[in-house]
Length: 429
Image (tube, rainbow, N blue to C red; front, side):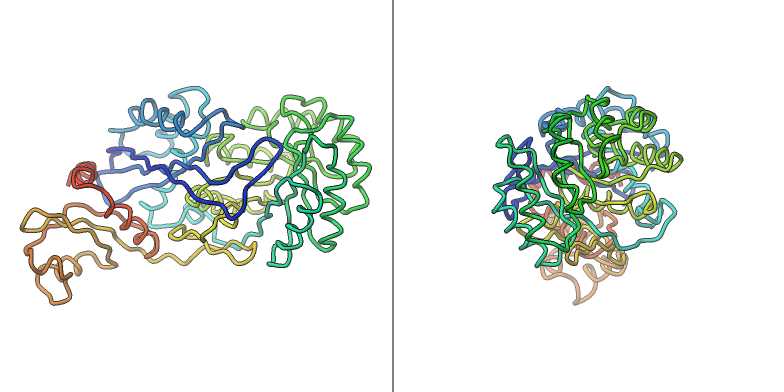
């Protein structure tokens, strides 16, 4: 199996309500979804959102890095996961989100070639996950109302965004706690506080049964973070302080935080996340698996990584799909309230046929040989192909579910003739 190309698609996913933190306001998830193609029916998907506020990358940067640097380094290589990961992570410095998209697509491809899900490929079995759900930064009253609404819909672990410049964060947290006395509360300051503010706020909210406070000070202020951790009665979670394995080692050795938040977009993908997870496990430090505001492809793969290393994580923050206006399809995940489970896989093939009149037909099938025969010889063939026999199979992709295949079918049907021909050329049948 050889890598023949990497294609990119920009996705824009509307949110139900604006996502507001101390760092940014977002109305839509902007996301680049990539596909790694091979000379077989096996393909791999990955994705990365615009992460400029955290990693310095926007969609243009991510796209350019993948097209100009990463793809030329990987195309033509025989599929060998360890070797490809080495090439990926040494082809350029930084660009962690771009690398994350490709890293997860390589893992997705490896798992598909193994006829398995990612969690199975990593040597584990699927299990349900409980994710926190974000309450965006707003006025104390509005946040209390949002929290009460979320809890009423079955979301019992809430991640409360604070860090407002109006010095109302204590009032925000108190208001939320009063509105949802039985909810599990996680507080995320997004680096907005000073050491002095942090200690003052911690003292005020200690009676409120808060589970953790995430990144109260600047990520670069390790000593400030350590000071807060040493004096806090509430667990402190390092987020922006930890991008790489070396960052994690520094925080752990300094005892600068009680917990570490891993995000694929920060560290560079699944392989790099595993390095941090396994290091933390060796040092008895629990992790949170977090996420940026991401598309369903990256959330689905991240969730499976957590399932494979579930004992390493005390908290999970993968709520992006719960914030979309419409529920995503074709991800392999199912959401019930804040519980995430993995769908049972049932492989389907997306295919492109070349008809006798040279036109192209796209469809999906569970049994590929049988379906091609139907198109050529049976009344069960599609109405379009019956009048254009014989047809020839010129392209196919393997997908883990009917919904995933249907989603891909809709994408390909929107392509122009030349775009479809380019796609077909990547498989080199």
